[in-house]
Image (cartoon, rainbow, N blue to C red; front, side, top):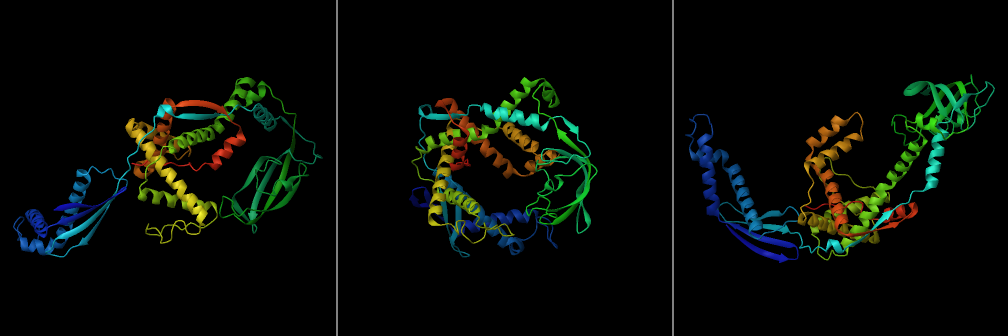
Length: 459
């Protein structure tokens, strides 16, 4: 067996592999002898089957296995002896082989670049903060008070208006046939809440207690129940009662009704909720600021295999955003023959390429920071992430856990963001971090402009 380096350019490496015909024959003979010791064939005692018979029966299959094993050995030797840090799975192609002649093959590899990391402690990171908007707190408290205002039964002659609550029995039908889930008794509905399909609440404005009427509605084309989507329906409604809302009151009774000890506790909970709803956007902007700093140091070439794969992901995402149909995989799991960026103009393709390069280079840098500083995702981290996913689907927790237990690739998809967050947190501990105030408009505008919604960890 002979291995020669035939290409050493940039991140590309190619090796010419030659395996002597005599070595293949020798290895094949050994394999057939091993088979003959255990194979069972009619007319022969175990272990006494002639080699010629074994060869006739298993020769072609065994030769293929022998050649594959020898090529695998040669590939490992080429990679290990040259201490290659591969960026992706290498390709191995047989370029020349006939029975009785030497075999020639070509091993093509792409390696990871040498990455010179910056001094993390010298990085200056701007961390956004969002002062609590007291107006937003006040509006939320007023909304809670309004939604939970005491109600009183209106007179029989009173006509329901927007903001009033009607207590109704209703049944929906399509082509005079009632449909599942379309009926209820003594249902309280606030007119103007837009909790029913368009047209339903409008049809109840002006009704009085004791009224009965039919309301024609059209289910939206994108209605979640597909069997109702786009269908014309009629709801038969009986108005049992009309209730009017009293004046909203912000007091301890309201807080107790919502499960809090007093009004102060309710207001503190509102403050925390408002803060938490902006936390993901603040974190995203902080990560962007860190990645921007790191990207200034990304002066290395990126592997074409990683870049090509990420470019396809970005291009498909851009096509989807522009309303261009994204071709799905074929039924056998193979990709279609069309380019991922087909339909995009040149400017958009360039933008996609720039985003892909940025993502790959940053992914490599984050991976290297993690490697150098021994940052890892523990089994406990992964279990917690699976638990968080399961919590999002109440009643299906067991199925979610079983899904991840049976799908290692899905677990790996969870591990990637966990690793990234650990590296980001490490950088925040070491770097020079300065807080600055932002506002909601700037915060979400910067999030929309960011192309760093996903930075892949590269193994």
